[in-house]
Length: 92
Image 1 (cartoon, rainbow, N blue to C red):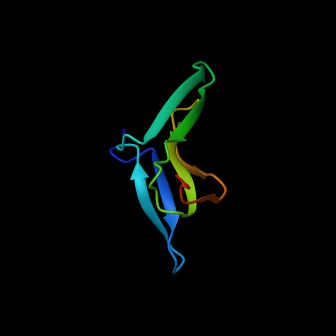
Image 2 (image 1 turned 90 degrees about the vertical axis):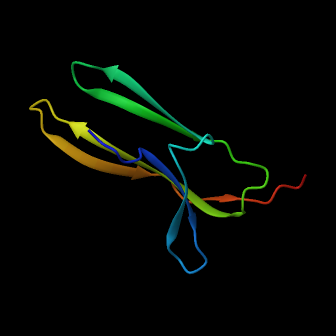
C-alpha cells in the first residue's frame, strides 16, 4: 500500500524548517504496530528512537504517517506528531 516511511525524526534547523534526521529505515528507530480490534479496525502505533550519545543537540520532533481504512473500505492518509522536545549534548 505504501513505499513511504511510517515515521521521521526531525531536527529544527536554525533558519526554522524541520530537517529529517532518521526514518523507519534506520537502526535507531522502531515502529511497533498494535492491532487492538480487527473488527472495528482499531490499532495503535508505538514509536521509539534510541538517541546516540553524540547526537547533535537541538529541538526535535517525531512524526507518524499512516493510512486509516474505514468500515466501508475507504482509505484516508493521516499524520501525527509529538510536541517539540530538546536533545542536549552528552556530558560523558
